[in-house]
Image (cartoon, rainbow over all chains, first blue to last red; front, side, top):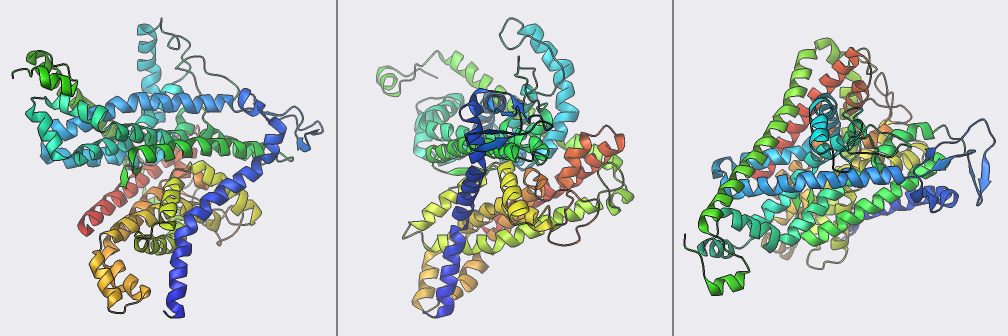
Length: 325
Length: 292
């Protein structure tokens, strides 16, 4: 083999390693930048929800060998809670809708429009997140504020979390609903795929035994292909955890106020990084940026673990509704 | 329908109920399924309806042909900026993506590295976009001194586009018959020949479909760009240290401004974005299906 080919082979190898290099660099640098915050805040980073950039007019303080603005505090409890609640809510909304719609698409709907419906569901994954945010602001928030949330409060007033003040439509519910539509295509994709890959003999066998469509669908999704269902749900969750712009636009993006009910405004880890970074530029000690790096690091570890686990369990990966085996 | 008896019951573990109840449940599930689909269709129509209506009623020639600052003027700088950023992203994602896919597809037999890179490539797509943005800010903008710029923003987008290009290219290259590749090698073809004469022509449609999907996704991204591309009221003056405007910023920033005109600009930008992105995704799907 001549040099040109050797070089070409080497180049392809190098390029195939590029994603590894990028991912490792992201981890390494984000970790490196988090070190001052880790030393400054320690465990309090996770146990306090106070995010306060400190008092600029006072001289900075020195703790554990690092410098931070006077009285500054960087706690992510609120953001962590917001991310977990909004993602959990998204799953609660998305899972039944995905289950019902993939079953309808596979078993009930005339085969002529099956392709159209699947494309429609996939399209939810392709809509840019700022568009979801815009729609959330102009359609969903007023609807939640004026109609749905007051109604929920009347009906569910005795259920904890559903009583309380309604300040605006932005908050946990709006975030959960928007996130749900972003992850439905991922879950549906896995469910539809698991339908399609079940051997025909098994499907025919079940039908021959007298099962109804509903029993067939329920059995396949919750039993025969349940690992795919779990995996798909985790892949969806992984997407919800890291979503930034849509949530930033409809969550209310609060700081330092813990939610008191499902109508409260929240903030998530991803949205917090996006909204707090520009003010962090002005922190001369660099501690705010370090704290946001640590926040990103924690977010990345959570969301990547969920994704890897989902990929492992589902046996494939689904990116924005696109199937990758 | 007669109920099954003993043996079947034991084996399947399904407790059969009276058939009327089962049929009622079946119909109910069907109705619920249709309702779920209908609800999703309604929301899809609502999203497209509001954006298209809002955009179509406010779009003027002046808005799309003049520069602006998200609250006054137009969005020409944002339209061109989006394409400049996506174009720069392509430079950093297509060559490595296609070359990497060539390696991965040919090394399936001896596994090892390819399975690791495949895993990392998938993981890279699930890195939250704002984390890529923060990384871009810390490393590209500050440490490497690029400033808010086309290069920094384009590279941040490229990081996000690379996995899509690489994985979809690899999947379409995998459809090339192995015998053909083996025959070519047996006839004395080298890797470059096999890449140019066999993989690229045969997997071309699939690769292009992957690239179009990556463009569609990148054009709609925001979080990577907030702190890498910045914002510019005009066009960037060069690759480095000159910020770039982009459409998603106008949507995000404009709708949060207390000015009717800013909302108008946000709607027009969202309108252009949604048309562009959906068109790209559908063309990508169409080409991909034709290629397969």
